[in-house]
Every structure is written in structure tokens, then in C-alpha cells.
Length: 79
Image (cartoon, rainbow, N blue to C red; front, side, top):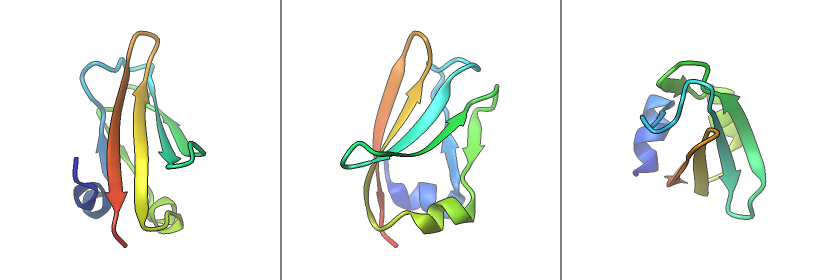
């Protein structure tokens, strides 16, 4: 998925495979988890501008995790 979309909208859309009790992790290419948030029943999670501004340009892994599934996607931050 294009990171430009994530960066502009500042939201992550939680895949249907992930339950309301799941969580989202954003990690850098070295595997360091930068952010973690609970889904809490929401299907869209808003990233604050502070979080986005703290991320350098580069490739990141977003993982949506619950007890039964892990859905991963790569995003690229260009600014």
C-alpha cells in the first residue's frame, strides 16, 4: 500500500481479519517498534501529527495483530 495515502490522511484502516480486541504496531526496518495502539473496536486509527513528524523518511512495517491473525503491510514515508 502507498504510504503517501497514510501520510496525507493520517489514518490506518484496520483489516476485517483483525478483531476489535486487536492491536496495531508500526516498526522500522530494524524491527524496533515505534508505535503500538489498541484497535478498541475502531476500523480506522488516526495517527497524530506528532507521531508522523517523529518518523524519518523510509520504509516501515505495519502489523495488525489479534489472537488469530497477523496482517502486515509495508509503508513508505517520503517526507
